Amino acid sequence: MEEVRGGANTWREELASLVEGPAIRYGGETIISTPRPLKSVDDRVEKFESESLKDQATGFLKSWGEMLLELGKGCKDILQQTVVAEDSFIVRKLGGHVSKVSGRLRFLNEFLPEDRDPVHAWPVVFFVFIIALSALNLNSSHGNLSPPMKDMRIHPPSASRVLLPDGRHLAYREIGVPANRARFSLIAPHSFLSSRLAGIPGIKTSLLEEFGVRLVTYDLPGFGESDPHPGRNLNSSALDMLFLADAVGVNDKFWVLGYSSGSKHAWAALRYIPNRIAGAAMFAPMINPYEPSMTKEEIIRTWEEWLPRRRLMYFLARRFPKLLSPFYRRSFLSGKHGRIDKWMSLSLERKDEILIEGPMFEEFWQRDVEESVRQGSTKPFIEEAVLQVSNWGFGLEDFQVRKECKRRGILPWLLSMYNQADCELAGFFGPIHIWQGMDDRVVPPSMTDYISRLLPAAISHILPYEGHFSYFFFCDECHRQVFSTLFGSPQGPLVQKMEMVETPSEAADMV
Image (cartoon, rainbow, N blue to C red; front, side, top):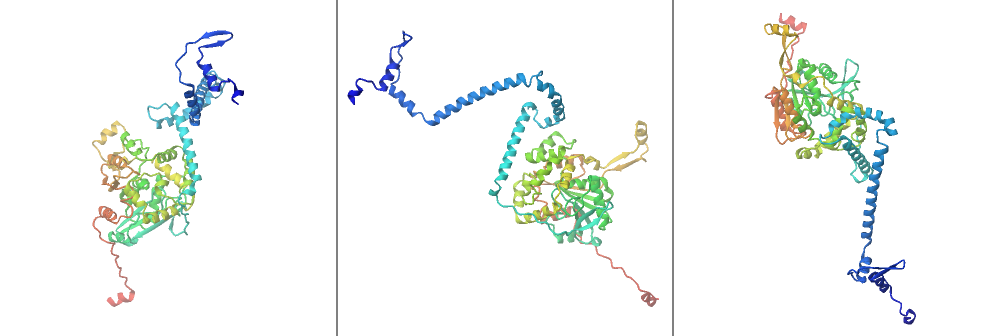
């Protein structure tokens, strides 16, 4: 074998002769090259053989990335020169329509930071929105990994109902002392995603009897067992409350209680039927977050406490309310139970979280939601959301006691300075009490600060370390403090007078 090979060089030696030779022959001419100090051939071969597949793939991907980057730059230049140019065919045909649409949607730029260019910001927002929807669909497809949710139950009708003048029925519930023995009557409209079963959650009947209170709660139109009301507004809401009070035998003035978003119906009662209202008790009262009279600081302090999803819900309710329907169908109208903070996109402090995780709250919440969604329609919930962010038809400053003169013009005004006959007091004359938790992130304290600024006569009760639910729900001592503040010392129910009815025979004997 060695003889057959003869003097043939190995491939290593041949490679060395090609690389290390002092001259290179090309086309019959000899080109002299100066030899450079090189590493040994064995070292080069070993380095080539030791290069891993990972290094080769990395280099390949880097090269492809550079090629794609250059290709993208080239495509961008082509589009700018041919498609987006002012004299291009597409711009000539579609430019007018695009400008009209962009003009109508220009109000969306108000939601962008001041230092962001809309041309660059909105494509990023749209891209992130698509990714978020994809993530939601991915999570829903893996729903079997989460614990099973309980199915909602539809309970048999159990509410008492009154017939309103327009033919609708309003479902209500009353607890406490009977009408003929009540010292105080308290009517409470419920908040969003609630029903007549809420009232004051966990209130003891013994406490109501101790203070002689009759508590009446009712289902808003379309909620629970109440009939829907087409085209309802806050004026019609106040009239419903008035008709209910008359129907259940509340002949004197009554107190109104508003909690969270249900407070707008309490404010409406103060505005449209003030002569029947003895006073108002507000707990974390929600106002219109788009109220134009709010200062910039109050707006920032309010909106920064809310999760992005909740901000989106308010935006849709204000601009595109019909788009709320699929969100509601996927949450509380899905036929499955869920957590209140997830459905309502609430950010809660620790004290509220401990409360809603307890079995007592869970039992109450599930039963209340089942009654709220009994009719299975999204319309009443959309109406309620729209009412919250729309113009209420009045301002909170209207409740401030003030003097109003009917005369108009300079001369009548001068005359009114000497003659006050045509002037009268306006506003709400009863007491307004507000309880606000300082750790409330559902209705931030900034809203109560706004109310206090417009209504300095309102009595604010600041609650340190309390959240949105912790003071109002299942707190016996809290309820006693509230009743003592509103009604004073407990005096029990009224004593029913026994009327003596004389018969004709008894009268004759007395003669």
